[in-house]
Amino acid sequence: MKDTFTLGGDLTVHRLGFGAMRLTGKGVWGPPENPAEARALLRRAVELGVEFIDTADSYGPEVSERLIGDSLTPYLPALVIATKGGLVRGGPGQWSPDGRPEHLRKALEGSLKRLRLDRIDLYQLHRIDPKVPMSESLGTLADLQREGKIRHLGVSNFSVNELRKARELVEVVSVQNRYSVVDRQSDDVVDECARLGVAFIPWFPLGAGDLSAGKAVETVAARRGLTAHQVALAWLLQRADNVLPIPGTSSVQHLEENLAAAQVVLTAEDVKELNGKK
Image (cartoon, rainbow, N blue to C red; front, side, top):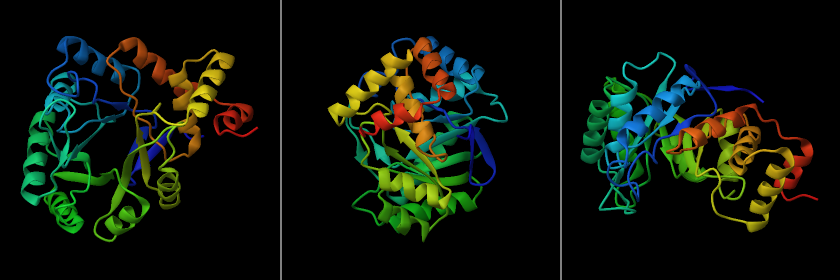
């Protein structure tokens, strides 16, 4: 199992990153209850060796990006900040796609300002807007890339067929989908990304799915003296070398527990049980 992955051929990061969605208020809306704690959490993540932080302009909205910019600049050279555009918020828990070129350009400019960057290392289309052709949305991001405002492009919530169509338009270095040991609907996307040498970034690492798989996580965790999150993250890291999990938390204790999963090696028996094989 490899400890690192190289995005786009030139950005090498430790595979276990940090997802910054939860550094916001309830329903991913508004500021966190304690902004100082959120900033301290981000700094602690970097102290512990996190080199890949994922966020989006819609988290808050704008709150997560602003916290990162306020907390971590000047950025360490090895730190890669990934963000996303293409979703708008109407309120807590409300998400709507907006892939119009004018929106994406405005979203990117806002992210640059909040993150205090001249160029986004990895900018991802958050979701396909059914009202806008993919070619228009990705074409706008390609234009911004040519302008030097984006280093690499990624996509999120994409199927294998959508990924193949996207790769006809732009160079895609990552796909970010919901995926976990208990929610494997993107199994084919993981495999396709591995075949292509593209990063797969799973979000919601424990997920909600097959209860028997969830019980297996608890069983393995108890047997190994680990937390359920550590088992779930270790499974993701061993699933394929192109998988870059981004567990999120608002607790320093949970952050440290999650990052310790990078040192966990599941046995063949563990993996067999987690995969539902007797």
